Length: 280
Ligand SMILES: C[S@@+](CC[C@H](N)C(=O)[O-])C[C@H]1O[C@@H](n2cnc3c(N)ncnc32)[C@H](O)[C@@H]1O
Image (tube, rainbow, N blue to C red; front, side):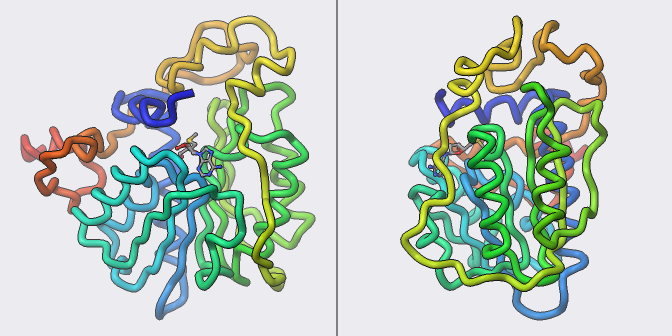
């Protein structure tokens, strides 16, 4: 899987991934809106280009109070995320190039007010999904929020189990997306007491949804959605899924991959850059 071009589907208005981003951003925004006054911390595991967190912080009144660390392995995505953060004037956002599974990367920032586990759980074995959610009790502070995603395409749908695993560990469900949407999004608030996050531990092994899909018998047509989740194939084994309502606008982040970056207008996170140019 090319994890750089995987992000291109975000730029297709109406794609499942663009819709998922809008939902994740809503949850991130709500978590920031509800957070207690004072300094806030956020961490994002396998952060990609940081479109979710940076996209929200760019227009949020509390941005200057947030210290965030995004951990991402792909250097191209790291560069794009750094450019996006710099263009938005987000001095508190740090993008670390490294293996997000290693606990050492989060030292000093956890337990955090906001923990993003987006685009991660669908790339892990089920055992590692549970293990990663268990680590959320060390990554997240009391009253903090975990925003997570998990596709519902691989059967059986793991989203209910993700909720159970979190709720067994002291997390309270704030919101979970409509089961008809193929890319599940959820937000849970931690009501427990965080355990210390020890250095030198590995939380998960990132396998990749494409590899996992080949290893498991998931039925024909699964990889209609394989090309960056831009377009869902007709046969995904889930005829009940709603593929119609993916029309939310999003940031046009492709500009950040250009070396001749000019400062985009990030003051309207609900607009794509091209829309912003038109003033619409
Ligand atoms: C499905 S994408 C999700 C990106 C981002 N979180 C989002 O939702 O837009 C998975 C990301 O994980 C990154 N990745 C894969 N293995 C990783 C690892 N061990 N540590 C950090 N990042 C990793 C990939 O490069 C890719 O950008």
